[in-house]
Length: 266
Image (cartoon, rainbow, N blue to C red; front, side, top):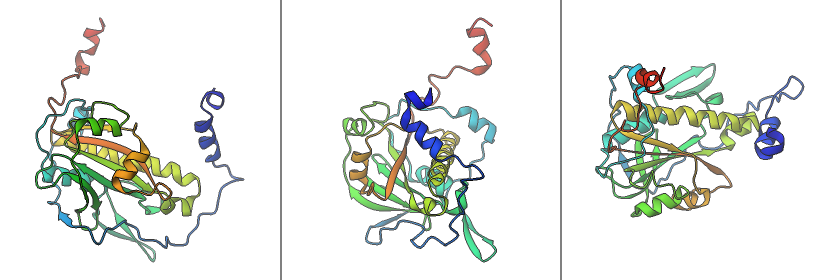
């Protein structure tokens, strides 16, 4: 069924399966390129330290819901910085033998951390409207481009879906794929996708913990987003997008699971 109806997905999965007879010896040579993208000529906006979120994690998980109605209120720089730090910030260093690895909020195959985060800022306190790159070592935003974004333009970027049109900001996840694949080969692409899911969920949980809205969307026009952010799709792939900001009502469409049985006649 999968092979016949979804040939590309089948080919990807089958060609990244590992068996004892096709296991590759991982490349143990250290990655020769920088571990982070940096834009030395871009103005750097320092972000406030991440908030300490005190809500119990169980409550936060229950409150996480995709927001499809953002208000026109501004997102604070404090809240944006907290989301970025909890998604992909640098917490410290740890030694494994002779190697130093950065400690970050999500697991990463081989500690290689191939992701980069960009922000399309529309209504963020203290930020001009435009495109920014998150610099985790400095916990700051590198200002790449000044641009005004209309709701219609934002919708067009995301396949004309209306839900992100009023988001205060959109966080883009990209992957510098060779950081992982130089060591793990084609299997490394699986690891990249898994890692992106971990980081994206952290943003969603952080947003819920601050009573903000968040909406992950995988449908977008890669080329348009690449042109907007300056990403070279030959080296760096756009993987995911999450709209964030104050919501009109975070849980307006939620049905309390405790009452679901009654609503269904159970």
